[in-house]
Image (cartoon, rainbow, N blue to C red; front, side):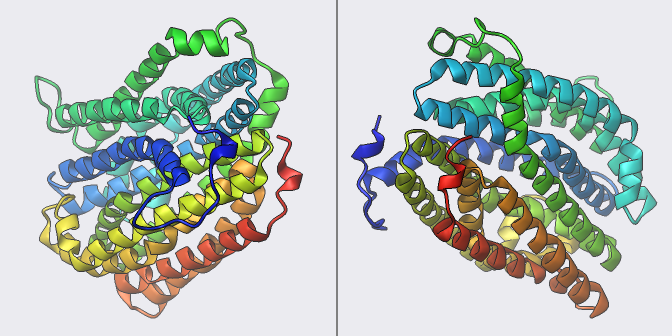
Length: 461
């Protein structure tokens, strides 16, 4: 393993990777692989649902259902960020027993929150669907999906705590294996329940929600089994000191709360965007869901680079090397941008190839083609924004990142989408033309803060 002081700080050569680039990829690639399995599942789920009767309605409902689930889950899944940052700092300090205390506290906190939230949102799942859906049929399908999907929240939040732990100690391969397993099970359960195989009832879109919940339960069990392995249990002593530490919980919440608010506000912004496309038309709303599913090809790997930079920045700050922390952020953003440029070009040149993976409906595909081309060009700068914002979160500047993205999303992206798409009647092309404004402005703000901000005030977390 590379030591923090052994890494030379030199510019990246695109044709030969430096030691720090290889080290970044060593952490990032397993995280990207794990997240990419989620992308595959999203594409497969959309493809399965896209071949049901009432295609336009169930695809539009799935778009609302998935985003609403993310909105609720993301409000609390940022506990992974708080756990990740604390673990990375303590691991950089070589304080392994404290890492174990952080994991214990995070799991207990996640379980309490998960049970309470799940109980509430399952009850109000149909009300949530009706709030965001313009069409009553779309709302009905979305409500059924959400009812079953929300049942898995407690198990998901337990996996969130485990992810934060393994990310913080640089063991992203555990997440990769978890992703392969749980998402394989997700596909199997969804195929069986959506279409009613092996004597099970044909549940349609609702089966996708229940299948995902069952897979999440298996994921929580997988992480527990890994955690009892001797190489982790003996080093971090989490079972020996199994207790809830209020001070650690307070630190997790302090770091996580701005990220939680950021996640929920951003997803509400995207739900508003989906609702705007619903005002344009049901086919346009279904097409937007397909475009969002396609964008995961680019976005999820960027999140993988973000996971890597949080680990590297946290470890570096824990060891007292802020200069190296900032260098890691910039180097990782370069790698992510190379990827987004390649994907953006592919989206622009061959959009129908991507869209045909998610639906066979010709009307939906042709409606989505220009939107995907616009989104493909705009997302090129997404790698910079995602990676450097994760680096800032690892430094402790979670409040700044929240304010920056929510401001750009709510006051630039959503209004421009409504103005161009509905008021000026440019339709779906007009609505999606707002995305490049969002991505570029956010990336610029984050880049300036990362380069010029004072990191010394965030050294103690």
